[in-house]
Length: 187
Image (tube, rainbow, N blue to C red; front, side):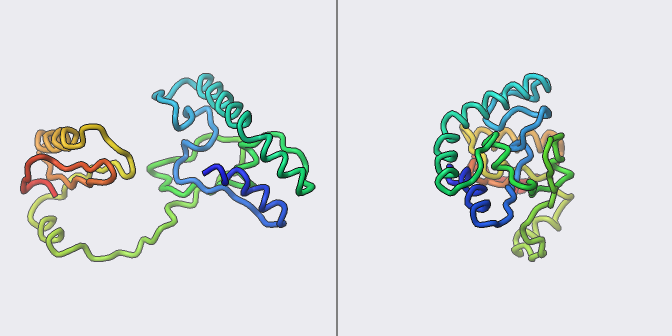
């Protein structure tokens, strides 16, 4: 992961364009949100800016000297800021704009949408049969997030869906969300 900090320098040395790509707008410095690892729920813009500045200073205290030394060896100019240098000529924000809008930032961002394949592929027959057997379900999944007590969380999600009168598609994901009891209204 720390190699990414040298990528824009390598591109500059080789005369190649460089753009940073992220799948999450929370990695873009903005007063709209705190840095990704700060456990705050939408702090004020003033607090968010202060948290980003503190984070940038911490990263620069660890990485600016080695990057600067490498740039000197390559005959490249001194950097003003490591984080801005990492952003490259423009940031590619690779996520669905309806689900994750572009925050207010002071550098070019191109919201390119999800870069994966959108080619439809048929669902397995048992899933198609289950979907056809009732009303459209609700989908719950945490993607690559982990969860403490995954069975307890899965059971709570199943209970909430039942209380709402919904069928449920529960994606196990990295959290391994698996309810403790099988049910016909949960896939």
